[in-house]
Length: 438
Image (cartoon, rainbow, N blue to C red):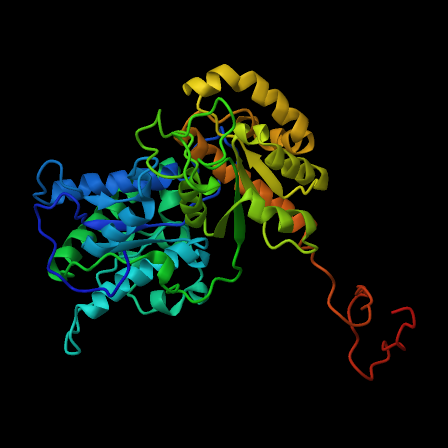
């Protein structure tokens, strides 16, 4: 991907990869690995919009009414699909919420669509943007970035409570159910009308990582390090075949043989998921990351280590892992992928697990307090995708707790304010001298 955003043509109606709308929303962090999908209500809204658009148009069977990233298969090339959808969709639908406008990823999605539209028009073209915002939860007007303030927000026509509560509350509260249906029907109609009256030619897909945030720099650039502890294909221990490995440890793909969706290294998939949660990330093999993990006085980011049990069969990697465990850094969390259908794993699983427990006792015990699934052997790519957000959230919380404390401002201490009752008017008989205790 990459390169300039060329303008090709108006999307063809018969192309099944051209959605009517692209739903852009901020992901909500999960509370637990075994809890419900925190974005399940967003997915419900997406499905309701698609149903209405199918009724309002003559879309043939199989053609996409919309695009939402949760509709993609686990393991699919996530960023490529997002970029392709943004380059072809007819309408961009940002789902407003306080979390949306601090999301670096959402800002890049907005930028990609806005660039496509800007470059497709002449200076005399005054057509309104093909952006139809939807209010998920209320956002104060002063918190809207300039890109959003320039749009028309006609909230009143969506119902009396839409502007006060947003679609999320209307959807969840039974007494507002009719108002939710009315708002979604109008939103679908706006999408269809905008698509027909203001067509945007197809553009070339852009790499979102290369684009600036349309909302401006995010308030905090959050980071997560991904460290891979696995052998390379050149340094495999006895009894291990090379089918899941590549020239570098970061090429490790533990689910390659058993999962048709696992077509690329696990670290690449993990990095894509991390970016979707609005973190910047780097991927490093253990031997390159060990120095900073062990000696860094001020670590730069929480760390998620993807650990292959076969790594402990290598004396050098085992020694590095032992030292990482001894450092006892609480913001370093381990995920242990383990394909139970792999014949090599079946024959050596118990022995490798025993060696792992002896090598990383502190780290594994700490990891079990977060997610037993993460340290007990994650069996599939979909299970890995479920575990990863919770592990990241916990590692980030530990990093903030231990590494990024908030100190008082510089300067002399300021006395705590005290309430002394009503203040008399200056010069009045009730005025008293200053209390020397204050």
